[in-house]
Length: 489
Image (cartoon, rainbow, N blue to C red; front, side, top):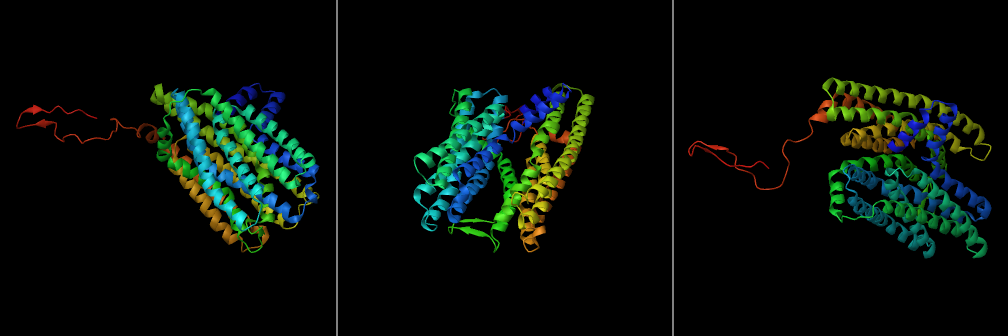
């Protein structure tokens, strides 16, 4: 993220309309374009292959398969990617580049193993209970692993600031996916849904492979210190927990409505709630521009002030440290409020367009009743995530875990309560959870500001901590009148 911010700084420093438009486009392309490319590919296959002519059961099986691939690949990869990102960043800072390959190998094995432990029982259930063809289930499983690999390898490429390559990998792979679907359907005569699923699976595996080969090219040496990566898992378990809880909070309200009596069950395996899931998707896109605004208006300014403060801590005077600290937190507050104001305007405009256009293209009924409340919830959740990243900046992992617990637990309880209300209030549980987590993170940042000196200067140790025999407690023996030779460890 910081790499994009630095580049945007160079663009916006020109202070011209052209530069501003280019900066907005730059941040858009390198943040949310990959996801939009995948959506565009799916819509293209829907239209060209005639997805609307497919029978209801096959259509819902494919849609549910893709839905589960996206949701659960995010859930299973999110716990480890944050720690792997920190490990890689630390080793690059220490210039121990030979340790990056062990991080990559351990990270990929961890992600794929954990994902498989979750996925294999489910897909076996789909075969034996849902009576879905083995080849179809296996293809779905490989698509799930392919997207998991994509998310896992994307972390390493992002740290190397390979944003352009990531976007190009998605464009190349999804273009190939589209044409492969045509080959599978019109030349090999596969079914429409299997042609799309197989092509999409190959596309995901190709993206992950390209990302992996790109990052391995930068780090050809292998120190084989695999235990160091596992040690990070144990040391920074709070980072694992906080990232997982945040991701869980984004989806747990959907899981609650999947359990409602009016849910949809496909082949006795997949459970979903189409009106609520579609309203969630629309609400997410209503506020997704916050990702662009956060990078272009918040982090690129804050990163410079954070850097100035750390430089003052290393070699500056007390007065300079205090001034840099105040300047850093003033910038943090002003940029957060600026983000809130701008995102509010953008979200309102998109919302007004949505309520006019969406009914015309077929979105109506319960979807449009649920959508407004969820749009508010996602607006607040994106702001909350900005604060969560600042907690990571200040190494406040305890605060990040508490934030995740609040977000996930309140979303769960609130959504259970909201499910008993009318449709217009279904999203209120997620909205309240986002607001509570946002409020906690804001005051937590204020607490960090007040205790910043203690956080920076009072967390180290004078003596190196080691495991060994305890030294003798006395350093001077009055009876023998001599000082014992005791070495501090």
